Image (cartoon, rainbow, N blue to C red):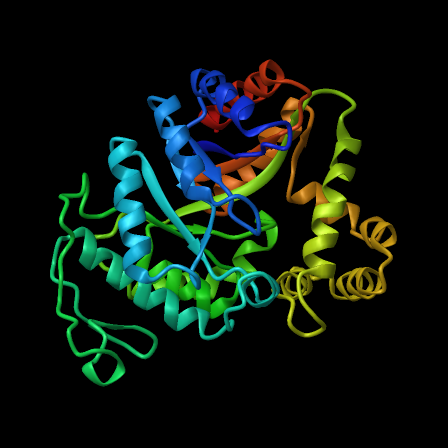
Length: 348
């Protein structure tokens, strides 16, 4: 398994990037750079590319609604160029709260848009004259929709690679099936290995049955908080607010993908309670209602033997990349955890 980590720069972006060199030496394989309603990810990834040598860099994730497909492809090609072929394009639909609430763009047809974007990106990277006639995107723009002067164009530059890896964040069955069919990588959230097969086994199998033989095996990227040692079990409580935010607050009743996932995992009553409390403004109570069992199973927190068991469960469930958040107070401590989990993963 590759070892990755999300970029967390609450203590300062430049300081965090300086620490990446330490993590790179400890064995970190890839860093995932978020983009929510925050600083853009692209400028930050370019900065990281200049400050690292071996480390792979992924957007984690760019939402699909506010960049045109060709701009997304241009951005990915540019990032792959400045990083000497170390870039992975992570994309996802985000959710209506961010897309409509922050960007003012309708949240519509995420599945269909994603498929068309992937096709357009790959045309751009192959330096073909881009021509696409789809339900959501038409390139060039038809004459009746514009000036009539648009014509097919190809990328001026020669990309480092004509097939930049595409990672798609998805948890719904139809989305996961599409990812298994067309993408190099899949990133679910709150990956629970003992339930992954029941929740996603069928859509993964259906997608892989249609997968192009030219694509590599699907890279499955699972996120997990990480702490290794005696007496650390209660650190899972630090994960409670984030799970409560997603399960309880990321969407309205009946429109929360993460709440639906918790229900599909078997936590129906708990998901209902968390959402009711969160939407009533009782965030602390919502966090307290998150089941300890769920927190433990989506985490890599505990003794070395326990973490090794959880790694084995993740590998058995198909995980090929671990996106870990090391719980340590400083860069040397986080580097030590990266080195430890890298060694444990290699032994499985």
